[in-house]
Image 1 (tube, rainbow, N blue to C red):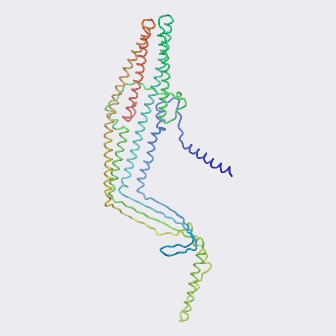
Image 2: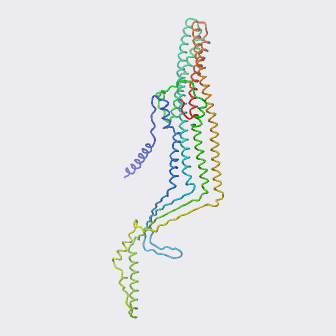
Image 3: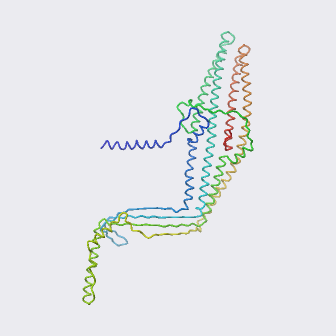
Length: 497
């Protein structure tokens, strides 16, 4: 028995733990070759903040159903059971004695229907609120896609910086060997060799930091996608690349698209519609309200000691039989016909009938009369509660309208700023490309001068740093251009490539 007592709670605990674990969603694994479309798809299915916005749609949908269901009557069913022991009770100064305990049960079925001006407004209000929730969800989806795309570009940018660090390390190694070779033939100093070794070591550190930055950016991408990172993030590679193409979009077209498709603007407009519907709902409080109700009910009562009823009926019948005999004596004395006293005699059949009728608990109900009620209510004075509610609803609607106007101005400025920022980024890429080419040529010339002994190692180092900076600036300019497009897309409300 002791083992069984210990086993059952343990088994229940393991079962509950298993059920709790089964309720946790199973997150998908990340493919080794990850495209931007795959990253966005995983994010829309797993990002916690985005899923929170999707969860709001369920209650809003049920709110629409509930608004239409208000036109239908509500139904309620109840059932009860009772027990009263035998004994004495005092009620209204009178003492009542019950010689037998009783069992009782009852049921009731009720229909209620309420209708008011608010009932007519509620479907429109709930639909507007549902549209606002859907607009918020769509806005969250567009913003999530932009955030994932930006972080995807951050990983690609970090990968490009790793490639640049590898090139810089190879150059440093080549310069170190060149300095050592010139030192061996007496054409360079030991200072040049040591400086080259320092440059090589710094390049190795640069490679390590660049690779670590790739891991950091990938971890942030996985976090944005809402999935756990693999144990080795380097196993996941990004498969998409983005070419540099001169932007051909016109500002007027982008502003028109933003006015019609910007997700935040659409969300505020939906919220404004919901606020206006709330204002109409508040004004409907001035209309009369109607209510109707109908009910059916029944009860049972059974004495636990049926002989109590039989004895009481037998005593009552005996008293009636004795009274009948006395009346017959009087009738005989005065010459009147006698009564049939046999009808008052209590028989065993009557006792069985009483016992059978007493067996009503719990389902042999005695029905109560049907009841119905109709009410019309028109509030006259409610301490200015209705004007207050209407004023508050109107203020919220006006605030929502101002929010839409303010957001429209912000979106217009945002799109314009992003458009000119994109033009600047595109021109910057071209300039940085020319700077990169010039810096590479400068490095080639400085290397040849040092190789033939007409240049110093300091000139070579300066040329190397200039080339590295120009190449890094070019990479940053390229990805700033792509990020500018990613920032313009949510402002416009649609993908641009």
